[in-house]
Length: 214
Image 1 (cartoon, rainbow, N blue to C red):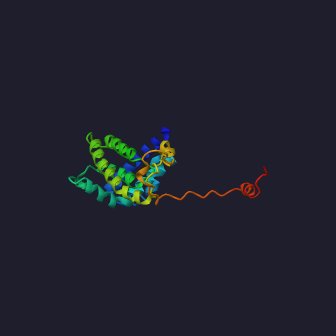
Image 2: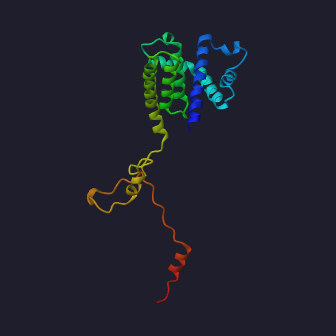
């Protein structure tokens, strides 16, 4: 179970090192070397296809979305000019923000914790706390933005239906009431589906038309 996580951690380290070079030497860094970003990831991964694939996904994703990532980063880090941030910190943040924004298969806490470890390992002693503070605000903003969209996409539940996963109360919620305040009037059933009409079986129809003699 731990091997895939170690591979992804290794892939993040390789991606950070390549993003550092792209940031330092420009978007044509790979072309100047006569190669591609994918080939650089494969070389750095030393034959581990899983590491190379995830590193390539991160590098290409960050480079493609860097303008949007930097715009959000600048909005959150109001008191920091991106160009005045340490190069490592800036690219750790870009890497983790790409995962938060575009990698649905990566839990937000994992992306943030991995970024903190990268900052501690490759930057200064204070970088872990700095990165954590920035990314936590990004996470909160993204969750707030996604909440309405998820609510619109989800089908409306009837008022009496329990939330998904609350299996313990399903039977109680669906059972008819046999006691309580009888004067409260009928419940509003406009949102409730009509129960299916029971259809007699052929055997029942025959029995009804030809009752047994006494």
